Image 1 (spheres, helix red, strand yellow):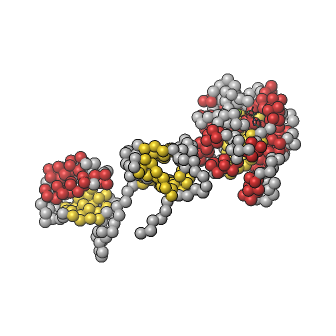
Image 2: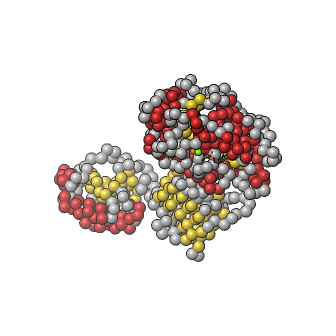
Image 3: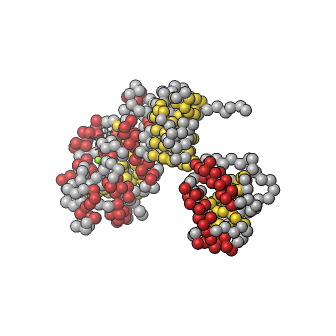
Length: 267
Length: 231
Ligand SMILES: Nc1ncnc2c1ncn2[C@@H]1O[C@H](COP(=O)(O)OP(=O)(O)O)[C@@H](O)[C@H]1O
Ligand SMILES: [Mg+2]
């Protein structure tokens, strides 16, 4: 069976790509999927830190593509979830150390071994973006409910289309429905109206994300936290389940609208 | 198809370019002058055209053809082929590098000639897609988009702009100075709208959106709802 290859990207930096990659990997692994995360942010690696695997790095992705080790040797196994692996980015090299065809070859090699390959992207639209996209069969674009992040997401969605990897799916991260209600934050329907792509998840603003990130324990390990639930829902949607969009405490007409759009359940 | 006859000159649009048929009874010099006059009069329309000359039995020298070729080139028209029943004329054409055979001879149209009902139209480019932030479309002609134009996207047209969708990016019509250009959209809410040298920023609109058209009136850009006028 060939693996699903999912690239997590964004236009603007700092919107939550690494957080999303780590948590989706954890959620998928908790659902008994065999998952390998690939950090394509060469030179600025941090997926290893968020996953709490930093101290176990021996080889990285550049060692693999340059033939200094076998793929297996660079796959760090997560002790908490035996079906979760990480291939870290190189810290001391730059993006030109890896090419799009290196990424395709690497993913091809991994493809028969795992169910999901999750690729974390660097910020920007240059070489690193092309590397991260090269092997993808699904692209998830992460954005925050801010005008500038949405504008950049629109640009990236267009570039993903231009690379013939579209249509991308959207993750709205750091949503605060209290603020939306007060008119202080862009509402999901306004963002979707502009971006016009399928929404695959809304992750609330949740301080547990930061706390858990600092501890190297992705929030999805705790499936009762609000952000954790959101990531588990995205993971289930990626596995083909229809999961209603959750109600973020605030009663919002948006969810009843989405309920109509995305099947039964609602609320 | 363009199809017109005047002063012994018939001009037809064909797949091989403009087929120009000259009346054999009129003197070459007269025909040449009126052909050049007709074409330079509507230079913008004929710009870049390829001409095939149908001469009939008349004998034309290489010098005469060469002169015509240069004069046409000067107004941006390329003269590439000569069709003639005269071997001498064919030979003069060949020495100038002009073709003397074309693949598809125009079919003689029988029945009614649509002399007074043709509309020549103008060039436009058509795009069926949503223009996202950072993408730009530019053309000397008109631009028609079937899709949205998002904030951060840009359309620049020498002519008019039509958006069958929401226009929320930047639109510049008549970018080469044409003040008759218009911009219309199903939802006309551009970040910035320009027609020729006039700039306008879209006012915040309340209520229901409706198709609108923007144009220049009294030295400023105005927008009004698109209504079908009763004739
Ligand atoms: N849903 C969330 N709630 C609160 N903080 C978040 C959330 N998602 C991300 N963050 C924080 O935002 C910062 C940037 O996230 P990160 O995943 O590193 O972004 P990127 O990889 O896109 O640069 C981190 O400090 C992270 O903890
Ligand atoms: Mg990151």
